[in-house]
Length: 268
Image 1 (cartoon, helix red, strand yellow):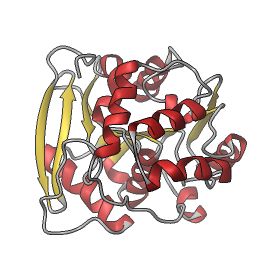
Image 2 (image 1 turned 180 degrees about the horizontal axis):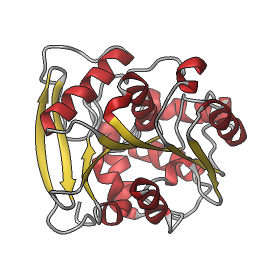
Image 3 (image 1 turned 180 degrees about the vertical axis):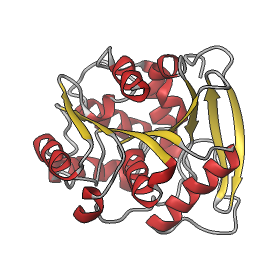
């Protein structure tokens, strides 16, 4: 969090599913922006490389997912079990933050949640950006799942680092970010809520502007299938393939102009 803009603050928002920890920065009168991190070891802190740029025009609210590594806690009386629970949690979170309508962005699993919430409550989402979303337009590659299996079955810092080095192709990553991922290996997290891809007819009916950025070097899924699937289903989508970047290198590293691209879309 030392890499975040000066003056950032943390708030805790009670919801029926647990207390949600949110890092906040940007002008108080800025348009609300909700950021959802990926799964695994990702937390709200993972947006550090984009927070300053996005906070120039927006009031940024970056979330720790309930039940995942981070500072959110499952203190509520209702467990998160289904997609409907996840979308209800996002609704309760926005209500607790006093936000009626927000711009929303997510990476990986967070993008999957963001897209499902936009389909559930499109009136609450002004613009939506998705960074290499998983489980939305294509399935996981078998090689990716096989590589991830040892880390998932018996997580350890060494296995987490080896997996990330494989997926990012050995491209140097921020040491502080890598330590955060390694630390998450010992976190007592719950099994994440999963579900099917959004129905094609629901995607065709989504009346929300979407920016989809797909990582060209992603080993998570077939990049071409994700790009083609989104372009063919979403009626108001701009689909861009980002060269020379992998799935897990987002959103904290290359490309250098990522923050500018996101802020340009959100400010349109």
